Image 1: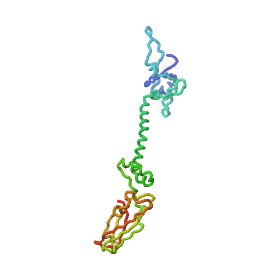
Image 2: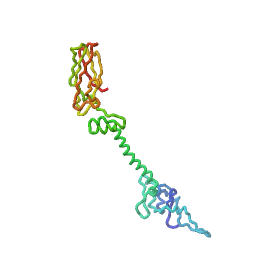
Image 3: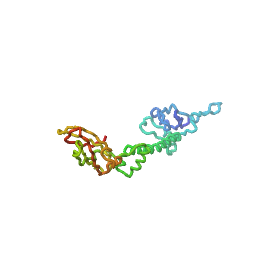
Image 4: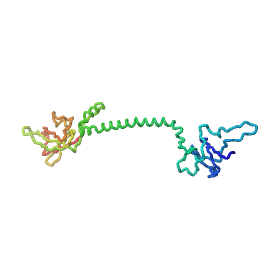
Length: 272
Protein backbone atom coordinates (compact mmCIF):
# COMPACT_ATOMS: atom_id res chain seq x y z
CA UNK A 1 0.00 0.00 0.00
CA UNK A 2 1.28 3.51 -0.79
CA UNK A 3 2.08 6.02 1.92
CA UNK A 4 -1.12 7.86 1.22
CA UNK A 5 -4.20 6.29 2.78
CA UNK A 6 -7.77 6.63 1.64
CA UNK A 7 -11.19 5.87 3.12
CA UNK A 8 -14.53 5.83 1.33
CA UNK A 9 -17.96 6.97 2.58
CA UNK A 10 -20.30 3.95 2.19
CA UNK A 11 -23.27 6.23 1.49
CA UNK A 12 -22.17 8.70 -1.20
CA UNK A 13 -18.97 6.82 -2.22
CA UNK A 14 -16.84 9.94 -1.74
CA UNK A 15 -13.16 9.04 -1.19
CA UNK A 16 -11.04 11.01 1.31
CA UNK A 17 -7.29 11.24 1.86
CA UNK A 18 -6.66 10.40 5.52
CA UNK A 19 -3.77 10.06 7.91
CA UNK A 20 -3.05 7.25 10.34
CA UNK A 21 -3.26 9.74 13.17
CA UNK A 22 -6.70 10.85 12.14
CA UNK A 23 -7.99 7.29 11.88
CA UNK A 24 -6.49 6.50 15.28
CA UNK A 25 -8.71 9.14 16.91
CA UNK A 26 -12.01 7.82 18.28
CA UNK A 27 -11.26 4.37 16.88
CA UNK A 28 -11.62 5.67 13.33
CA UNK A 29 -15.21 6.89 13.72
CA UNK A 30 -15.70 9.89 11.41
CA UNK A 31 -18.49 11.76 9.63
CA UNK A 32 -18.55 12.37 5.88
CA UNK A 33 -18.19 16.06 5.09
CA UNK A 34 -20.14 15.47 1.87
CA UNK A 35 -23.35 13.72 2.95
CA UNK A 36 -22.81 13.75 6.77
CA UNK A 37 -22.98 9.94 7.08
CA UNK A 38 -21.11 8.53 10.10
CA UNK A 39 -18.86 5.53 9.34
CA UNK A 40 -15.75 3.63 10.44
CA UNK A 41 -12.84 5.10 8.51
CA UNK A 42 -10.64 2.06 9.19
CA UNK A 43 -13.21 -0.43 7.95
CA UNK A 44 -13.84 1.60 4.79
CA UNK A 45 -10.22 2.13 3.77
CA UNK A 46 -9.48 1.58 0.09
CA UNK A 47 -6.35 1.30 -2.05
CA UNK A 48 -6.40 3.42 -5.19
CA UNK A 49 -3.25 1.76 -6.61
CA UNK A 50 -3.64 -2.01 -6.12
CA UNK A 51 -0.74 -4.28 -7.05
CA UNK A 52 -1.50 -6.47 -10.09
CA UNK A 53 -1.58 -10.21 -9.49
CA UNK A 54 1.17 -12.33 -11.07
CA UNK A 55 0.33 -13.63 -14.52
CA UNK A 56 -2.86 -11.57 -14.76
CA UNK A 57 -3.82 -8.35 -16.39
CA UNK A 58 -4.03 -5.42 -13.97
CA UNK A 59 -7.51 -5.07 -12.57
CA UNK A 60 -8.88 -1.98 -10.93
CA UNK A 61 -11.66 -1.76 -8.46
CA UNK A 62 -14.10 0.63 -10.17
CA UNK A 63 -16.09 0.87 -6.96
CA UNK A 64 -12.96 1.82 -5.07
CA UNK A 65 -12.28 4.58 -7.54
CA UNK A 66 -15.78 5.88 -6.87
CA UNK A 67 -18.35 7.18 -9.35
CA UNK A 68 -16.88 9.48 -12.02
CA UNK A 69 -18.90 12.44 -10.69
CA UNK A 70 -17.52 12.14 -7.11
CA UNK A 71 -14.55 14.37 -6.23
CA UNK A 72 -11.60 13.09 -4.25
CA UNK A 73 -11.50 15.08 -1.03
CA UNK A 74 -8.87 15.71 1.59
CA UNK A 75 -8.95 14.62 5.23
CA UNK A 76 -10.11 18.10 6.22
CA UNK A 77 -13.54 17.19 4.86
CA UNK A 78 -13.96 14.45 7.47
CA UNK A 79 -15.46 15.48 10.79
CA UNK A 80 -14.95 13.82 14.18
CA UNK A 81 -18.05 12.22 15.66
CA UNK A 82 -18.13 14.49 18.74
CA UNK A 83 -18.86 17.62 16.67
CA UNK A 84 -22.52 16.77 16.06
CA UNK A 85 -23.62 19.85 17.97
CA UNK A 86 -21.74 22.09 15.54
CA UNK A 87 -22.88 22.88 11.99
CA UNK A 88 -21.31 20.55 9.40
CA UNK A 89 -18.16 21.96 7.83
CA UNK A 90 -17.47 21.59 4.13
CA UNK A 91 -14.26 22.55 2.43
CA UNK A 92 -12.78 21.73 -0.97
CA UNK A 93 -9.37 20.12 -1.27
CA UNK A 94 -7.89 23.35 -2.64
CA UNK A 95 -9.50 25.58 0.01
CA UNK A 96 -11.91 27.19 -2.48
CA UNK A 97 -15.49 28.31 -1.61
CA UNK A 98 -17.66 25.33 -0.63
CA UNK A 99 -20.77 24.22 -2.48
CA UNK A 100 -23.31 22.37 -0.34
CA UNK A 101 -24.23 18.88 -1.47
CA UNK A 102 -27.89 19.87 -1.78
CA UNK A 103 -26.97 22.75 -4.07
CA UNK A 104 -25.48 20.34 -6.63
CA UNK A 105 -29.01 19.11 -7.29
CA UNK A 106 -30.80 22.40 -6.61
CA UNK A 107 -32.45 22.20 -10.03
CA UNK A 108 -34.70 19.47 -8.66
CA UNK A 109 -36.12 21.91 -6.09
CA UNK A 110 -36.46 24.95 -8.30
CA UNK A 111 -39.81 24.02 -9.82
CA UNK A 112 -41.63 23.49 -6.46
CA UNK A 113 -40.17 26.70 -5.07
CA UNK A 114 -41.09 28.62 -8.16
CA UNK A 115 -44.62 27.19 -8.10
CA UNK A 116 -44.93 28.18 -4.44
CA UNK A 117 -43.73 31.70 -5.23
CA UNK A 118 -46.28 31.97 -8.05
CA UNK A 119 -49.00 30.70 -5.70
CA UNK A 120 -48.12 33.34 -3.12
CA UNK A 121 -47.85 36.03 -5.77
CA UNK A 122 -51.32 35.28 -7.12
CA UNK A 123 -53.02 34.20 -3.92
CA UNK A 124 -51.98 37.13 -1.70
CA UNK A 125 -53.54 39.89 -3.89
CA UNK A 126 -56.63 37.72 -4.36
CA UNK A 127 -57.06 37.27 -0.61
CA UNK A 128 -56.57 41.00 -0.06
CA UNK A 129 -59.21 41.71 -2.70
CA UNK A 130 -61.66 39.32 -1.03
CA UNK A 131 -60.95 40.90 2.36
CA UNK A 132 -61.55 44.38 0.95
CA UNK A 133 -64.83 43.21 -0.60
CA UNK A 134 -66.02 41.71 2.68
CA UNK A 135 -65.11 44.92 4.51
CA UNK A 136 -67.06 47.03 2.03
CA UNK A 137 -70.04 44.67 2.26
CA UNK A 138 -70.26 44.54 6.06
CA UNK A 139 -69.48 48.22 6.70
CA UNK A 140 -71.14 49.74 3.64
CA UNK A 141 -73.67 51.70 5.74
CA UNK A 142 -70.94 53.21 7.95
CA UNK A 143 -68.75 54.09 4.95
CA UNK A 144 -71.65 55.72 3.08
CA UNK A 145 -72.63 57.72 6.18
CA UNK A 146 -69.17 59.07 6.99
CA UNK A 147 -67.96 59.48 3.41
CA UNK A 148 -71.01 60.51 1.33
CA UNK A 149 -68.88 60.82 -1.79
CA UNK A 150 -68.41 57.03 -1.70
CA UNK A 151 -72.13 56.29 -1.54
CA UNK A 152 -72.80 56.26 -5.33
CA UNK A 153 -70.05 53.68 -5.86
CA UNK A 154 -71.34 51.59 -2.95
CA UNK A 155 -74.89 51.74 -4.32
CA UNK A 156 -73.62 50.57 -7.72
CA UNK A 157 -71.67 47.71 -6.15
CA UNK A 158 -74.67 46.69 -4.06
CA UNK A 159 -76.86 46.73 -7.13
CA UNK A 160 -74.57 44.11 -8.66
CA UNK A 161 -74.23 42.12 -5.41
CA UNK A 162 -77.92 42.20 -4.54
CA UNK A 163 -77.60 44.28 -1.38
CA UNK A 164 -78.70 47.80 -0.40
CA UNK A 165 -77.12 50.75 1.37
CA UNK A 166 -79.15 52.00 4.35
CA UNK A 167 -78.71 54.98 6.68
CA UNK A 168 -77.01 54.15 9.97
CA UNK A 169 -79.18 53.02 12.89
CA UNK A 170 -77.76 54.81 15.94
CA UNK A 171 -80.50 55.25 18.52
CA UNK A 172 -78.11 56.97 20.93
CA UNK A 173 -77.75 59.92 18.54
CA UNK A 174 -81.53 60.50 18.38
CA UNK A 175 -83.64 62.36 20.89
CA UNK A 176 -87.18 63.72 21.32
CA UNK A 177 -86.74 67.44 21.77
CA UNK A 178 -90.39 68.24 22.44
CA UNK A 179 -93.71 66.41 22.50
CA UNK A 180 -97.30 67.11 23.43
CA UNK A 181 -100.56 65.13 23.57
CA UNK A 182 -103.79 67.11 23.56
CA UNK A 183 -107.47 66.19 23.27
CA UNK A 184 -109.18 67.58 20.18
CA UNK A 185 -112.00 69.84 21.40
CA UNK A 186 -113.98 69.34 18.20
CA UNK A 187 -114.24 65.58 18.53
CA UNK A 188 -114.63 63.48 21.64
CA UNK A 189 -111.90 60.83 22.11
CA UNK A 190 -109.61 62.25 19.44
CA UNK A 191 -106.03 63.01 20.54
CA UNK A 192 -103.40 65.08 18.73
CA UNK A 193 -99.78 64.02 19.24
CA UNK A 194 -96.95 66.37 18.24
CA UNK A 195 -93.25 65.69 18.69
CA UNK A 196 -89.83 66.61 17.27
CA UNK A 197 -87.24 63.88 16.65
CA UNK A 198 -83.72 65.31 16.40
CA UNK A 199 -80.63 63.75 14.85
CA UNK A 200 -77.58 64.91 16.83
CA UNK A 201 -75.07 63.11 14.56
CA UNK A 202 -73.25 64.79 11.68
CA UNK A 203 -74.43 62.16 9.19
CA UNK A 204 -77.86 60.81 8.23
CA UNK A 205 -79.52 58.28 10.52
CA UNK A 206 -82.32 55.87 9.78
CA UNK A 207 -85.83 56.89 10.84
CA UNK A 208 -86.63 55.13 14.12
CA UNK A 209 -89.80 53.49 15.28
CA UNK A 210 -91.47 55.13 18.23
CA UNK A 211 -93.66 53.63 20.90
CA UNK A 212 -96.56 55.54 22.44
CA UNK A 213 -97.89 54.43 25.81
CA UNK A 214 -101.07 55.97 27.28
CA UNK A 215 -101.14 55.88 31.09
CA UNK A 216 -103.78 56.34 33.78
CA UNK A 217 -103.68 58.61 36.84
CA UNK A 218 -101.34 56.15 38.57
CA UNK A 219 -98.96 56.19 35.59
CA UNK A 220 -99.89 52.62 34.74
CA UNK A 221 -100.08 51.62 31.04
CA UNK A 222 -103.54 51.70 29.56
CA UNK A 223 -102.67 51.05 25.94
CA UNK A 224 -99.38 50.81 24.04
CA UNK A 225 -98.62 50.91 20.33
CA UNK A 226 -95.53 51.17 18.10
CA UNK A 227 -95.50 53.30 14.94
CA UNK A 228 -93.32 52.73 11.87
CA UNK A 229 -91.59 55.66 10.12
CA UNK A 230 -94.04 55.55 7.23
CA UNK A 231 -96.92 56.05 9.70
CA UNK A 232 -95.65 59.23 11.34
CA UNK A 233 -93.12 60.84 8.95
CA UNK A 234 -95.62 61.94 6.33
CA UNK A 235 -95.58 61.67 2.56
CA UNK A 236 -93.04 64.47 2.13
CA UNK A 237 -90.33 62.76 4.19
CA UNK A 238 -87.64 60.71 2.39
CA UNK A 239 -87.60 57.72 4.75
CA UNK A 240 -85.08 55.81 2.63
CA UNK A 241 -82.48 58.59 2.94
CA UNK A 242 -82.89 58.91 6.71
CA UNK A 243 -82.95 61.95 8.96
CA UNK A 244 -80.27 64.41 7.74
CA UNK A 245 -77.24 65.06 9.92
CA UNK A 246 -78.02 67.61 12.65
CA UNK A 247 -81.57 67.64 11.28
CA UNK A 248 -85.00 67.01 12.79
CA UNK A 249 -88.37 65.54 11.89
CA UNK A 250 -91.69 67.01 13.02
CA UNK A 251 -94.33 64.46 14.00
CA UNK A 252 -98.05 65.18 14.08
CA UNK A 253 -100.58 62.38 14.47
CA UNK A 254 -104.29 62.07 15.26
CA UNK A 255 -105.22 59.19 17.53
CA UNK A 256 -108.61 57.73 18.27
CA UNK A 257 -108.69 57.08 22.02
CA UNK A 258 -112.47 57.01 22.48
CA UNK A 259 -112.32 53.48 23.91
CA UNK A 260 -109.80 54.35 26.64
CA UNK A 261 -109.39 56.79 29.51
CA UNK A 262 -105.92 58.19 29.98
CA UNK A 263 -104.21 60.82 32.03
CA UNK A 264 -100.69 60.84 30.57
CA UNK A 265 -98.37 59.32 27.98
CA UNK A 266 -94.80 58.18 27.33
CA UNK A 267 -92.79 58.18 24.06
CA UNK A 268 -89.88 55.80 23.35
CA UNK A 269 -87.65 55.63 20.25
CA UNK A 270 -86.20 52.31 19.07
CA UNK A 271 -85.00 50.29 16.09
CA UNK A 272 -86.63 46.88 15.61
